[in-house]
Image 1 (tube, rainbow, N blue to C red):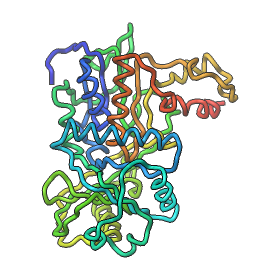
Image 2 (image 1 turned 180 degrees about the vertical axis):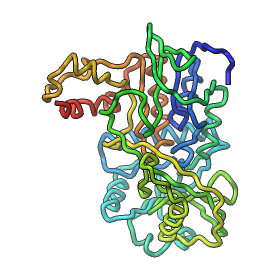
Image 3 (image 1 turned 135 degrees about the horizontal axis):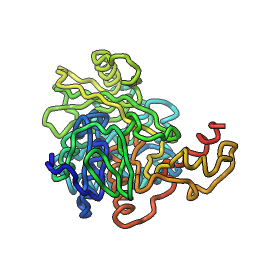
Amino acid sequence: MPTSKISPYDVIIIGAGINGCCSAYTLHKAGLRVALIDQEGIASGGSGAAGAFISPKISKAGELKEIMTKAHAEALEFYTTNFPHFTLVKPLLHISNSPEEGEKVESFKHETHLKYSNIPHKIQLLVSDEALRMPSIYFDIGAVVDAQGVCTAMAEGIDFYPFKVERLIHTDGVWEIGDLRAKHLVLSIGAYPKLLPIDYVGLRGIWGHRIDIETSTHVPCILHHHVSISPTTKEGIVAIGATHDVHYSPFSGDVYDVEQGRDMLLTKASKSLKLNNINIINDYTGLRSGSNDYLPMLGSLVDADATLQKYPHLRHGERIDPSEYTYYPNLTMINGSGGYGFVLAPYLAKRLKEHIAEEKSINPILSPSRFFPRWAKRQS
């Protein structure tokens, strides 16, 4: 940690998950002075527990699909170019786990420009009969990254401060975080407790659990079915993980049952393929954040009290152009990526850099303020 008590930075980033680390890396490369803060350490939460797959999102046409298509292409180039030692390129087999998802897979095949082909015979021999009966798509190119390794590599050369942020202060055009000072502040704290009164932000916590195992079964591709199964950058180690299927919150007061989580992952993995001689090496758990409308968030945060004071009729459904809201100055949130954090992070970090360093506007569809009007109406 740097020793100076007061450090003048251009940007302070709170949260050292994949969004925070990727943003710090991208802004630092652009020549900005960056400070990164996290009370637990680099990739210590949901990002460290992620499978970190660079996979396309199988969805029908729409705004989310357009964003994810761009993000997937940018992510593949970003990781393979900048962090090849932490990136493993492998084919990707996506098998639908329900009739509804099967429809999305078939629709995706007709619309995608990504190269896909028939499942090779050697992989068909590994996959269960149940899985082979479901609609699927086999991409020639997919990737998985070492979640903790790549986050740590991104943060190299960045001033890192391991402490808990208690409050945010903005005076005379400068954000003050403890002894640190910067013009710009970026919040990338995921689903963990908010540092500002922004209850309107539509986030949902998603608990993730990943296990790394040794197995005598050779897994030649990345497989998404009921859970994700993948070779890793570590020779002989296979990762099994799930996001949406593990429902638990660290804020509930309950203790997460790791053994039960392991059993669930292995049981669901067995529905996809047979893994022999399993030895569990490690468990990784953490809370990820997804948005209520499944679109990621990147943009300014509305000062709710100031905006409602200025426009009290928002409580009664009055429509106000978002440009008229009062926003926290020079503060940007990057959040809500759900299970696609490692796909979206380079895309979002690039737009953040363009916004801060080049003063370009951020696509309003990504703005957290999109949730504000409905919330304001409920305050009547």
